[in-house]
Image (cartoon, rainbow, N blue to C red; front, side, top):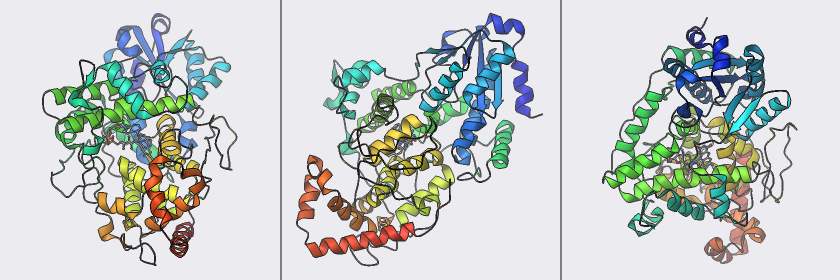
Length: 545
Ligand code: FAD
Ligand code: SF4
């Protein structure tokens, strides 16, 4: 018997525990006793059910490190709760989470369980199906978020024109974070303009703490390697936090050593320092190992003490209090981008309730090429970013936005396939966060619901913000010719191709003015280079998934 099983079985309930305690289903991404039912009731009055679902694990070829991170955290959480005196029923099922709960209900004769409203749409579907099959499960409000549905509705009373900045300001006012007498500290809600420095090694990047796998995590690593051998990435060198204590330690380190320098280099990309000063804690925040309220409050407190400059503190708080909350509300309000009135991509669907939304406002539908699985493309920025994702299941925001998604948008790769790729390849991806970020923010597939313009650029931006171009076989200063950087030709060709849909966008006025000055021959040469670049990327067959 595995060590985990033998230890967790000791926390199994007796018949009197089943009737005498309140029972809660704890979803895989609500591993906390700092808010929610486990904070509201004494440990000795609670019992919890946790489920490992094979069906969910098989739904996508998730990065092996993501599976390890999830399962190791879930198992350690179960043991932590058992040590507090909470009774634990830990279910392994070949079916869905709902199937696992039905099994637990049958086996233990629970009268009723409760769960906080699941963050993932996929889990809500599972639970609805199980309720229809007889599961007795009440839904409670989820206190892990920083905002409510009403906060979002108040910010956008007409249910249209969702602009993150408006929501963020409203949340600053509501929470009083970085506010003095109803005004933003420093006089401005945003210091984004100060946070666009390139990185040339000015400030050394501190070495982060790592967490060697213990025997419980080693069991999970063996399980993942045995049952998911062909999934994306590998488990080599897994060293992420898996316990509450390790998460806390990783956050304290980020707060003290990384956050003070976060702002200025937030948008920079470096081949030598791929993580720069990013906290790299999204996966733990999304599992509720770190609560958004806590990280935001801690950063505000460090700013007040003078230990984190305002531009860095505000930059970080905007991501968590603003973008993160905004994205999940948008996902909810659009039923996972299913209710949009925009062009749809003809994408093969499994026809199930889990099938992903397929908006494609700009008609993008080309298959995502093999380069996204790690086949070398020769585009140094792409190859470096993908290698990092294969290795770690993580890259920072600007690599996601201005390299991986930028290229996909410019080339016209399927937004759905790109979303699915991000979903299985990244350790922090769940439907509520990955779909708005990819279908909305980064590819403009939603026609501008999430972002006010497509996030696209030619080589000049990547060359300015990174050191990637220096070691690339393409020349970022050349627009056409076999050694010219494809990004630039793709950029102008994209604007030309989508002129009808994008010209009226006021934020694209300047690029369209520049495009207007290009001759017919220049545009044709750019188009030829762009088409050749796409054909070259598409010529390598990619793995099926
Ligand atoms: P930091 O740079 O330290 O930022 C602090 C925190 O802010 C993050 O940990 C995260 O919790 C939050 N945050 C920042 N930006 C966003 C955002 N746009 N949406 C939601 N939360 C945000 N984030 C995910 O958590 N899961 C995803 O699947 C995901 N997919 C993305 C896909 C694309 C194409 C893009 C452009 C962004 C995506 N993001 C996603 C947002 C962001 O890139 C990551 O949260 C961030 O890079 C994680 O690294 P970090 O923890 O070092 O973040
Ligand atoms: Fe990327 Fe072009 Fe720079 Fe090469 S030259 S790294 S392809 S932007």
